[in-house]
Length: 208
Length: 208
Image 1 (cartoon, chains in turn blue, brown):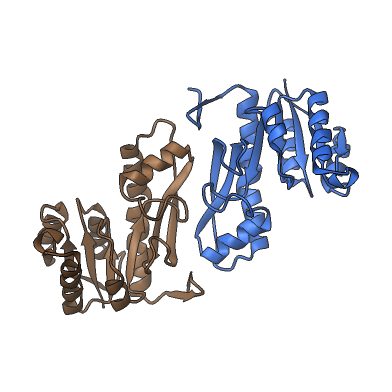
Image 2 (cartoon, rainbow over the protein chains, first blue to last red):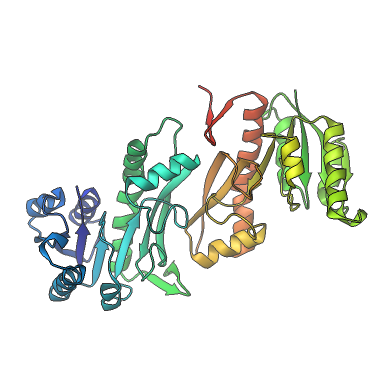
C-alpha cells in the first residue's frame, strides 16, 4: 500500500477527488494516512474528519520562524513514514529540506499546461487571470513531480481545457478543476501506487 | 472577397489545407491570390500551379541585402493588394516594415500552444524537440495575428494534441499538423473572411 499525505490550504476539492478515487476503487493500493493543512480553517480538514482520515494543521502562525515551521512539517511527514506527498491546492512553498528528504516522492497539481503560466507568482486564481489576459484559447492542468525549482519537475500527466469567450477567472478555474485537476491527480496517484512510471532524463513515461 | 497571399517555405501542407478549405467551401468569401515562397524549390509552388494560383519565389539569395529582400517582398504584397497575409510554414522572419504596412492583417500558425515553446529559436522541428525534451504530455498549435514581436500577437485559435510516449519529433510534428494546424488555420481564415472576430486589449473573441 502506498501511504500518502495530502497537503492542502483551502476547500480541498482536489483532496475530495482523491478520497473519492480511493473509495470508488479508481485509485488502488493507496492509503491516505494524513491530511495536513497550513490553514486551521481549511474545509479540507472537515473532509478528512468526515472520512475518518487524520487531519492536522501545521500553520506558520504557530512558529517563530519559517525554519521552525518547515522543521515541524518535515518532522510530521517523517513520523508518518509516507511514501508520497501530494500537494493538492497547497499554497505553501515546499522548502528544499523537504524536497531533499523525499526525492521523487512529492507531486503537485498546477492549474495550467506547464511550461505555460507557471513559476513564481503563478498560483491559484492568478494563473487563470494571466490566461485570460493573454487571450489563450486552450489551458489545462498538470500533475508533476516536485523538484527544487518552481513547477520545473518531471511532468506526469496533463489535460487540456478550452477557454470560452465569456470566461471569468473564477469560471475558468472551476472548469479546469472539474475537467482536468480532479481527473489527472487521482490517475497520477494510481499510476505511482501501481509502479507504472519510469523517469529518464526528466521525462516521465508509462511502463508498457 | 478576402484576398489572401500565402507565404510558405517548404512542402506547403498547410497551404494545401487552405486550398482544400476554399475548394470545399469550408473557407468562404476568400480568394487565394498568390503563393509566395522564399525557396525556389518549395513544393508549395507546385501545389499553387496545380490549382492555377499565381506562385512566386522571392528569395533572399537574389538580393544583395536583407533590406532589399524585404523591400521586394513588401512591394509584391502591396502590388497584390491583399487583405490578409497568411504565414503557413513560412520560415522567413517578417520584418517590422511589413508588419507596419499590414497592421492586424498578418496571421501565422505556430506548432505549439503559445505561450509554451514559442519565441526566437522555436520553429519547425525544434519546437517538437523541445516539447519531447521537457516531457510535456499535451502540445498543439496556435493561429495568431502577427505583431512586431515573435509569437506575441493576439491568439485567434488553439487546438491541443496529445504527446505519446513513443513520439519522435517527426511523428509529433505530423500529428500536430494533421490534428491541429490543418484544422485551425482554415477555420481562422474563414472567421476573418466573414468578419467574425473582435480584438480588445490583445484578446481575440468571436462575435456572437
